[in-house]
Image (tube, rainbow, N blue to C red):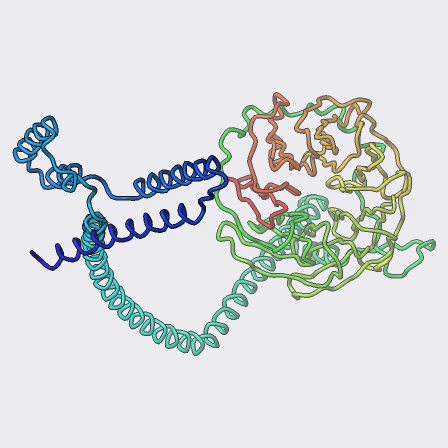
Length: 582
């Protein structure tokens, strides 16, 4: 017999001894509690004790291990010994049927066997968990190895990238040093380039000025020779030249300033309409309205562009902005030729002098400033308006300039005496634009009081008021021939007027719903361009008075102008860009 069997048998015998002790205790309790005087009560106590013992034995049997036959069956089934299990089952049933099984052999299995069985099953479960943990540990090890390989690869890559970065940083520092060494030379070259561009522009302006002067002298000589009856002699030629050079300046005793210029001689205000009645209006045969495309854009200013002006003889455009600056740009190279700074607040308008050598600018500082492009500086500041000055316009002779303001007035200035000749009052709200009719003393103004007015600049009086707009007027302009007027308002309505009949507009074109800020005619008076607050420039064909094209921008369009040849349409927007359409 093995040691384990002996221990099991010893344990079995200990349990039997414990049972005997319990029986003895029970018997002692029964003997101690007997009473001769009350046999019935003693019998009742014995019966109660027996029931208690049976209940305790049942409770013990519930906690005890299964019977031997069940234990053997489970053991054989666990080992998958089916044949042996069938033989055991058959023989056991025969023995139990015959009643030949001894009571001590059919007893319950000792606790050590069940404990061994439980420990065995726990061991197998732990072994399964161990195998699972081993498999997981192997997988984690493989993953760890892969991660280590990836880490080593990325570490190598990082080292390589760091070395490349350090090399690039070193090269960048060297390039910065080289760039810094080149900066002085580059600055000198840029300054020389700007100076050359400025000299080129000034030389071209001087040349045009000299050519114009020469042509005027030649025409005057020819007129003088024709007046002398065709006699061509040295004395007559010298006399003619002397008369041309010595232009007499008649002064009137009523003039207040000795430097005041003579009033320009041109078409009077009252004869303007009568002179045009007998002249038929030219109807253009074909308008170029279907071929505008964006050629380029120029970031001219950091803030919104307020106004554009085209040079009268050159492909040069001037721009004014809310950044207190004005700039000159050459076309189509888009080079900045010059810039000017002098206004103390944002600029509202800009225009060229008729000879192209001067500029007039207006701004929120209530001033009108004159700039000499040949000298490259500001030469005159005219102050007299009480509020913002919106725009200005030069007379064709170049000696006078008119300005309009938020203070409801228009002022005419003499550039020779630097004084205000007259103040035109009549509008009851802001005067938003002013324009001289070419070769005439007539002024055209538009106002926020929803009216247009035509003025005689010499007499300083209004001789015609145009009513028709239902919203404040932003701008009004003559055609180049002076035979028609275009006006726009804050509701996006554009009206066309015939100078021969100003009682009502000849055409009304809607470009809204947002404000129309400015209108301009092309040099051939075939196309009207309208700058709109809806980021569009509306192109109107004047033969049909219909919008035939709309040019899109990145922001609200504040100004629009054609160059003197009509090859380019230029527009300035609130994004600080000049859009060039060709």
